[in-house]
Image (cartoon, rainbow, N blue to C red; front, side, top):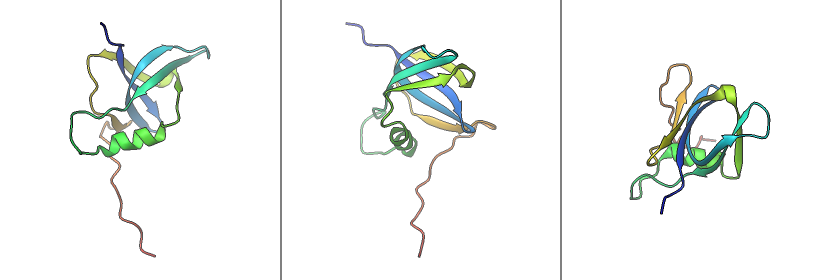
Length: 107
């Protein structure tokens, strides 16, 4: 039995380069857009290690059924064998942007 295809989608959004994994990628019915659906957020490996980038993306896209991305924002779409770590990079220099948990502000 063949498993459903897995795609790694890299796109630009608000000065950042996002890398997400999805099971569905197709031309959108909206002209000039690509639809990306069935986002994959399962953890990489086993254990209790929490990836803050994955948690940030899971929270940001938790209610998303389908992304309709403008074609000009898509950098690359790859069909891959397995899911890797999710990444958010600065679009200008390519450095990985990791949300760092900040301590609560003192009152």
